[in-house]
Amino acid sequence: MLYAIQDQIQEQLDSISSSLRAFSLKLTGNAVDAEDLFQDTALRIITNADKYRQGTNFKAWAVTIMRNIFINNYRKKVRRNMIIDQTPNNYYINSSDKAVDNDGENNVAYNELMKMVDSLPDDFRQPFMMAFEGFKYDEIAEELGSPLGTIKSRIFFARKKLQKMYEDSLRERRA
Image (tube, rainbow, N blue to C red):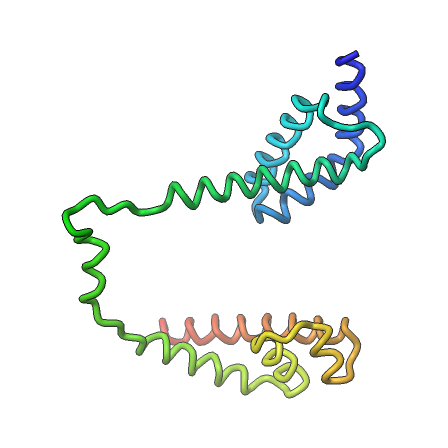
């Protein structure tokens, strides 16, 4: 009986594997981690086949397992990177109180980027700045009276243009 259930689960897993792989890539942002996440999920699905209730949405169950594995791995990674200062009076943690911040370089870079943004054509600058200020694409489209696809396209091309302008300015400084 258990083998029959595992065979059914394996068949269902095979049928949605491309969707799960795409979802794992979306979560992780890199192919190697995505493949690891997919393998962990497949293993968990197969080993817990007896917990799947027939007649329910298999894909939703599998995606939930993948999401939970991703979240647990992320939390482990954050905990691993936490710094623990065991010096008397937390010397290293408290030593940063004496540092003086100097945002001069950041302010120059920000001002330079804003000049680049200002040099964009108005059709690209306006939706880009609204997105920068936190408006959602559909809100921008409604405000500017343009189709949603046009707004997304203009923001995308504004980013690409700014990226190229910034790279060109870095090359000029190095030369």
